[in-house]
Length: 502
Image (cartoon, rainbow, N blue to C red; front, side):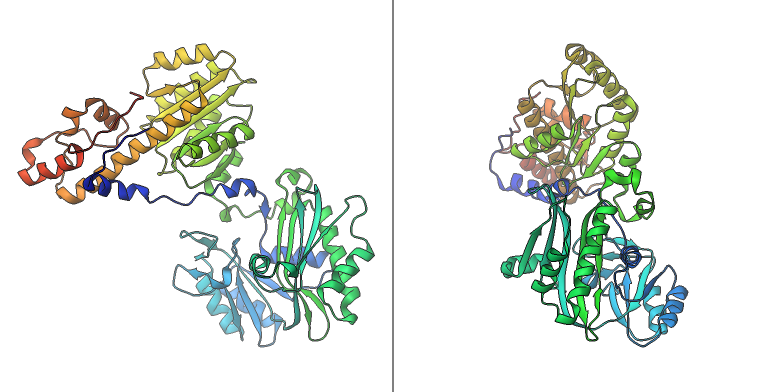
């Protein structure tokens, strides 16, 4: 690891490099690539199964929105931006419009708000600062609930079967309910062989607090939702709120449905509803190439074969103080083409400062992987460090190929050592980028000049130059005494980077 002397200039130089995006490792456990569909499609599916939902339709233009509002009639409706993210109501569009869910009172308002929503990005607590594009809006009648409840059907790994989660406190964030009033949430485990019987469904409806005249309707809806869950290979059906209206009708006011990616072969219609514009473009490209890829928030790219090894690789990077930039499983087919696609995905992330290749050569030979790796590095002219741990069939031949290539690919056998070096390389490159930014601001010169680094620390400078952390420019005559002093204070005085890997 680095041993850095404590000095104010050095501390100041490091500050910018500490601004990192939050990790998205939780996304791996949640299986982000599971299919989610828009609200209007969820509503259509519920209607097909005889479940009551407010009257409504989708519009892709302002004119369509106005026509739908006229068809619905009345003077009390809701327009909802169709974006696959939570928190739409409190979101903000890139044009300044507040709220992705708005109450409207006329077709004219429907047209006005649709015009401000469609074609613009909505930023919510779940989208990140980049937001997500709204390509359509859902206009539906506004219903007033006498009572609001929460109902969800999920797959539970612990019980290895479906579970129904219900709460009398609907219409609000269920995570808030779980935190503040956990006793208000009821969990019902379902026997996959028996399903949701009349007694189970009726008890859920009664415990929620439906009025007596609505119990049977609510029971039927619980059973119909479970039927959808089983027949459509759903992993999540969330109704929030499930409402009893003032005229004693039971309606699903809002629905969120998710489906198992592995069921695509038998759910053709469901998967034809997939909106890839709402997904990460890199993850979509990876899926098309047969790669299992999930973008995270770190700076160390990972290329691994096997999901278990990929998870272990990310864990050991974090244990050594680093942050993985992605989860990437190339599977058993780690061909040169797959490696090229993987590197293209990894290097498209500007935050990546090192790449850790961790391959176990069982199905595929290590020397074949090494040849593909060398070819990719040469063709892409990569300027970031690559740490390769190739274990298994023909691993000795793989090490020799990498060594003879003359490329800056570091072949390391031990997993712990490889992880340590990945983190060290990443920090070196980040440090170089940080210095370049800081010195450019302080020196205020057209061409960044490093006066003392090359003469005092030649091996470090060579590494920086190779990985393009610094331009290779040495023009001392351009510097006045003040700038020399600044550079020396940053790079020489009380600062020594000890890099054992060189």
